[in-house]
Image 1 (cartoon, rainbow over the protein chains, first blue to last red):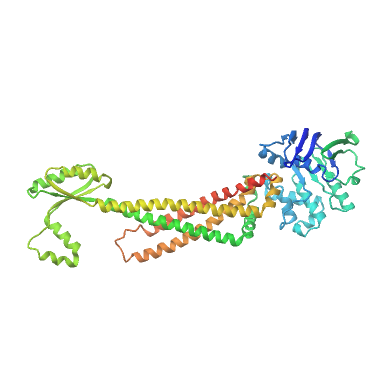
Image 2 (tube, chains in turn green, blue):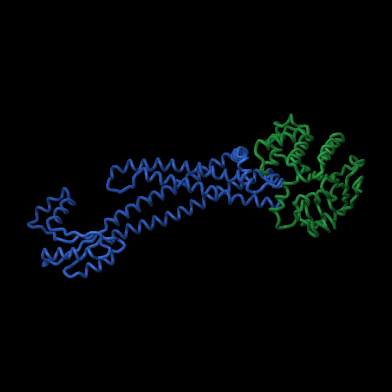
Length: 225
Length: 298
């Protein structure tokens, strides 16, 4: 599903964000990318999304090489990803339902089916009753759930969630993680970045990618070991 | 294509949002585009009328061939037959002294009594030759060289001047069409860029979600189309008013050969609306380049 070989990423200002990364993520795998702020977690997710291109080495996501000159194909690849952005990226002035539908409008789904899929996704995150509320009237945690609903309504092969527990209290953070990991299915991989390691220290059957100053180390737990 | 069909309601809502964000600017754009298209309509109408005038004059183009006084009636008929055979001659007729005199009486109208002061008819018989204007030089050369023809008079100078005016109007028309095209495209693409800028966040999110450019850009193309389409309706309404007004006034000048009113109105309205739709789409597509630029930030 994801394969990186000798992957490095340098920004234009010369900052080396990731150094010589080698990793492989398979279908149905749950992966936590952990590390302190500014360690390179988000840079890794940006590469997986095709927002950044590798400076050295190679990266392939959902069989699509992430490299310059492939923007059309990378855009198509993104349609198979369910992204949950750190800052949610919800459209203000629109309802929760409209925001969820926004993620599936261009997938060639008939309008009735689209509405049904979006409603089901909102129900799955426990926000069916807020479907017609404008997102600016929702709480922080509810907005996060709408963003997750938008990601899962797409029935993605890969869920990428960037710091979904940031700014949440302990209980809400646990709920969000529980919700996200519940989407780990046979064919769907879930990758979550977080610096709240205390919330996931007892997780089993997961892969941890530890990122520190651009270097990574991989730790597999449970059956994945 | 399927996505566009399934999302028609969404696109219309987006159009409303995009236009609502910059309502005043959009209203001014519509008025500006309408006035520019009105200018186009006026120039094309002027060209249509003058072109029709020239065509009519060309159809009426004729020369007068005067013959030697010693030529008798039989020879005159033979001259007419000889001229008819020349390429470029449409018709040829002998005008006798009396007909020439009567024609002048009709021209002079109230002053015709002057002719009565003359002892005898001062007008000579001549041959009236209707020709194709394009072949006037060829016809003139050949007629002049026919034995018995003394002198040939033509109205080439007048026709040439009218033709020059029409050519000038044609050139002006092309310049106006070019100016209208460029100005409308600039206005529309600027409005689309502004719309894209105002919806930057939404567009970026859609791009990150993998939306194709055609999906993101479609509402903006619709906005461009609506701006120029309404501008076109405004211009067509103004032209309708102007043409009706001018035709109303022209009943006092019946000798000016105007094209049928309905024909002129329908052709001008079709032209304005077609140009407005084409320019709206073109301007929007040019404006959509901004979306591509946003892509580099993703």
